[in-house]
Image (cartoon, rainbow, N blue to C red):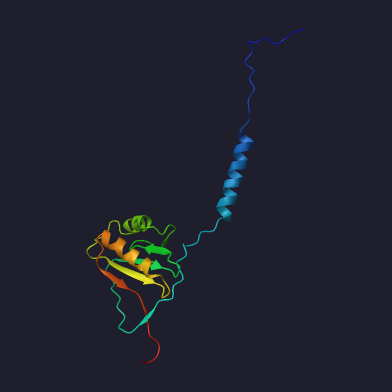
Length: 150
């Protein structure tokens, strides 16, 4: 009888090829089944006001949207969609506004506050305070034009 000696080079090996095939199949499945949507903006009912509509075309705009519940969304001049701020603390809002205003001339940038007509006063003041702390002083409020005469 011939017994195997301990000097043989036969080692136990695990074949990884089937595992890699399954990982690639899962990767392809998730890439095909994923849908990419734009980040949704907040639903806002603007207050009404009389006046002429102004549309500065070449001035960079930073839009701060505030929902009726006090949730913020910030859209910078180079952003395609607004970024919703999950934490309503001033620090979190400041980080998002600073990121959105990066690489822009802050002296020329206009901050447009789009607050719902039911928004708490505190949420608007917080947004104005944070913008002021970042040196953004050109601030305006978005409104809807009044319908009807009166």
